[in-house]
Image (tube, rainbow, N blue to C red; front, side):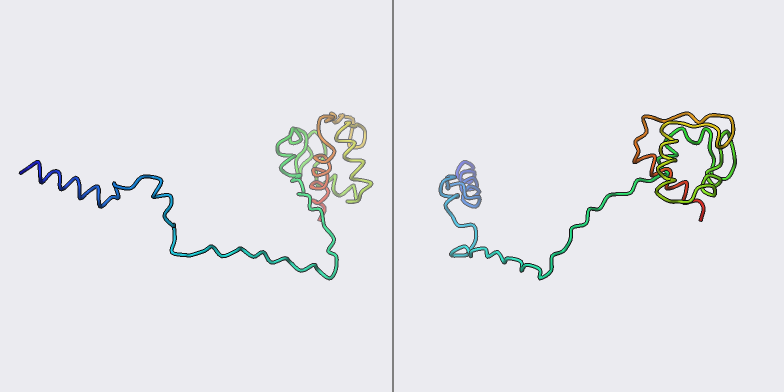
Amino acid sequence: MKKVLLTMIVAAGLFACGGGETTETAEQKPISNATQEEPVVKEEMAEPKEKVEEVKVVAKKDGKALIEASDCRTCHKDDTKLIGPAYKEVAQKYENNKKNTKMLVEKIQQGGQGVWGEIPMAGHPNLSADDAEAMVSYILSMNK
């Protein structure tokens, strides 16, 4: 009696789980009730009447972060003269324009002496012009 009951339970379990089907017949069954697939229609975007100019956006480098990550703070502070001039003194001396920015970038990269005293500023030849320009831009912005 136990064998019959056990066999019936196993048979009922297989029937409920679909144990009688093979993978071939399961793959042939439709996934949904739809009788046919609807075609996907792509709508084309209308051409703009006026041409729009592409604008190249370049992320601006953070001059303050570049200064903090470099050795600049060894000799310079924002408000106080240390070994070199305070950044605010530099900002007051030089107007924020392309000519001064270029000159200061070169001075950062090549080093200099004599403008702020006899102690020379070491050059930073490994600093890119873009990074030095971001630093100069930050320093000159302190004159506001």
